[in-house]
Image (tube, rainbow, N blue to C red; front, side, top):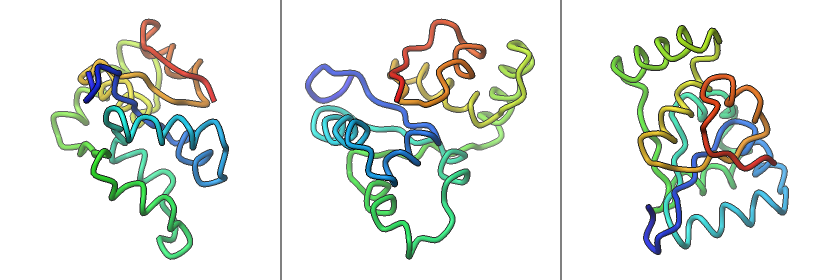
Length: 129
């Protein structure tokens, strides 16, 4: 749980893209999470959306916010994500890393891909954007 008892928030690629496009609902959810808890953005998610830091100033600022953590994808996480894909008969290792981050933090995922994440874990807590 976060600083005031609220759940942490995990952002997937769709959430970061919506943030960059200034989606007001996504911006509001992220603002609330930075004030009340913490945000996790798995490293693979950053890799999916990062293209040019000079043109992604808002994203760069978000990633350096004290409330934001970027969990690394080391060998252990990579193997766990791959094994999760095997068990769920899916192929997206980055989505699996989002699920793993959410599970580890008992967090909610902000996503545009509810169906993809639920195929990996039908019990994952998600907020659709």
